[in-house]
Image (tube, rainbow, N blue to C red; front, side):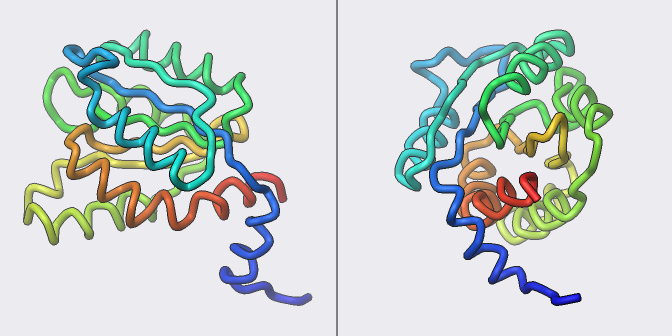
Length: 171
């Protein structure tokens, strides 16, 4: 059996071309014009020559978070990014709702996110429930709602592996 390196995987993944991505902002107060994180992610996705195929802002209510997951799982998106609702306050429900839906968990995402976050915010990084997993052949990524966390997740974790993540689901 021939082993293929992750670098070779990334090269093969480039053949996928544009990756369709869905974005969800979980917030009780944001609207599209005040959704700094959603606007940032849209710009970065377009800059990386990928496509936002769905976008929604939902309240931090279990039924809304679960409903948008089901809706976006039916879209062409290969990656669904949720930002917000991953902390430990009473209103933070994103992790609780979505983590139990994962068919496969990608524990490394949350582990590496918290490690990188620790460099920025110290021990407060342990309060993050950033996570990723697979649901209905989609990569679902959960990131905190602070602009610094969204930028960190995009630049250090999501963008560098976006093609590779999407490609792995086709194998």
